[in-house]
Every structure is written in structure tokens, then in C-alpha cells.
Image (cartoon, helix red, strand yellow):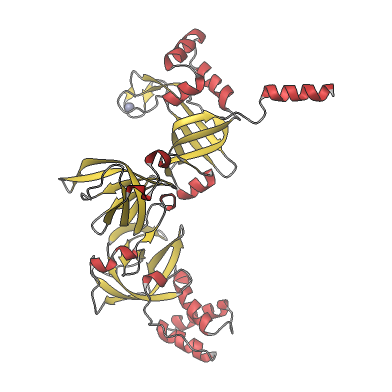
Length: 434
Ligand SMILES: [Zn+2]
């Protein structure tokens, strides 16, 4: 922690000395000064002067658009958009850190405050000696032990953090936790729902948006008069993560503009799922309506005919539900398998209809077969025969949780393998003759 916090200052000194001394040496010197109780700013000045360098003026406040993980320590003025406490355990000790969003007129960024700076939502502050790290390609501001925070001379209003602060992105680039983003998309679906917020009913709107790169779920916390099939430019929204899938949120500072309908291709062309390498999906953590192609490595136990709890739909083990004990189960048909495409692997679930399609049999026919064989395992065996080591294409929503990445297929096809057995035999035959 201390090491990481000193790093930006070590960077400042090393830069000022233009490589005259090694970073490790700077680190050791700085630590020695601090151990003697010399204030940080003075220690930096003294070390640089001792080696005949000149420290760049430290108090040039930057705009958030210009800060990055390689800047060392950074100073800026920002409005605190949100403050959330979080309990963490560090070196076996419970403590509270704070996280949220802060922004200026150029950008809104997530931050973590590693101690209590008494940050207030809506307050504009002058921040000194913060540092920036990168997480999943996004900059993140850290307010550590050495940061100082004071009320700013001038306030930034919420309007000042307007749409200009948002980055323009394609839907395929969205992931959870982007504080300010602008997208252009066609509304595939929208519906009004009611939720309870602090015990009171509140209307919200949710649905699906699509652009030529992909699809995303959205949630609008007020009525933006979004209509199905319209092309909209959504400025200054933010994303949250739901089991690894991004959810685009339209809040108080979001602006929705309706564009001409021909600004994007028609919905028939936008609803085509995009083919993703599984490795890339792993990095994203999930995605709506993705298309994967890979080889089935394994059909897992619990595939074929199964019994579910009529109350919670959990799969029964020996007629018992983990939650509801012994129950009379309802029959279902499914596949739980591992799909691998060389870049990564994930668990896929094929629901009843897709399994019926793959087998070319209805669930009732499967039940008949099981009855005749006096074992439900025949269906599982047939699925192993048909799927293992075969190339497969699946479409569906991919999510991740403690068990890793998984996809619930809305469609699944076994692809014609290059060179079927018959072709292989023919080929061998030809070779023998010639
Ligand atoms: Zn149950």
C-alpha cells in the first residue's frame, strides 16, 4: 500500500532528475526522508535539489480528460458525484473505504478513497496528490493516505459535468462500471415496470438497444419517452454490471435525442448476434445475445432427462430439492456442457427446446425411450454420442458468477464437421485404390 502510494512521487522525482539516479535509489531515499518525519513535498524538493535537478511545478491542476496511470501524482478540481462506503479487510483489519464517481467538465471517473476524507455528494473539491490506476482499460482515481482534499474556490454544477464528459462507445465496447458514456442505438424493446425504492413505488423503463456491433439492456430511471424502433443518441448514461453483463442506465444527467430512423440499419439487420472468441467474452465477463463457436469438450452429469423442484425450479438430486426437501419433481430436458474454442472455455446450458431440436425428438419421446430402457441415462448417453468432440454454434446471454462464465442458449446447432466419417472412409478408399 505504502509502496504503491509512493510510486507517483518517486515517478515525479525520477522524471525531474532525468534518469540521473535509479528509481530504486530514489525510492530508498524518499523513504528515508519520510522516516525522519520530513513532509513529503519538502522531501521531494530536497532530493531533486541534492542531485541538481528541478522539480516541475506540482500544483498545475489538470483536467480529468488529461490524467492517466503514468502521470504520477495528480492535482485537479472535481465535483463529487457519488459517495459510497464499503467495508474491506486489509491485513486482517476491518476498515471503511469510500468509492464513487467524481467529474469535471471534461470527464467523469470512478474513484476510491482509501481513508475518510469526509467527502460530500455534490461538493466541489481541490484534490492534490491523487494517483491514477487502470482497471479493465478504464482510468480510476485513488485518494490515498497522502492525498489532500479541500473545498474548491468555485463550484462545478451538475450541468458542468454535461454530455461532453461522456465517452462515445459502440455497444460491443460496453462493460460494467463506465461512469459516463454516449451511445447511438436502435430501440428493440421498451417496457414500463414498477419497482420499490425506499418503500415507495417508482416507475422505470427497461428494454434492449442494438447497434451494428451488438446489443445491450438498458434501464431508464425517468420517462425519456423512448419509443420502440426509434434510433436514439443516449448521452451521458452510465453502466452497471449485472452478473458480468453490462446494463446501460439512463439517469438524471442523461440526455436522449431522437435521430432520423435511417441513421442506423433496420432492426432485422441489427438483431444478428455477433461472433465472439470465448477468451474475449471471459475478459468482458458476459454479454447479451452473443454468438460462440467451439468444440464440445464434455457433456456434464445432470444432462438429459432431469427433475426440477416445482417450487424453485432447482434440479433435484435423488428426488430432493436443496431448499424444499423431498418433492415430486417436474420433468425437464437439458444439456449442461463445456464449450471450448481454443481461446477459452465456458459452461453452456441448452434448454428443453434446443435439446429437442438437436435430438430430433420431443421430451415425451425421450420419456418413452427412458421407460423402455428402464433408465433415464439413455438420453444422456445419446447426447454424449451426438455432442462430445463435435463443433457447435450457440447463441444466448452469457453471464458470470462464482462458478465462472456460463451461457444459456436460445439456439444451438451442431456444425457439420469438416470431413464427416463417411467422407473420411471414402477418402481412405480412394487412397487404397490408387
Ligand atoms: Zn425447491
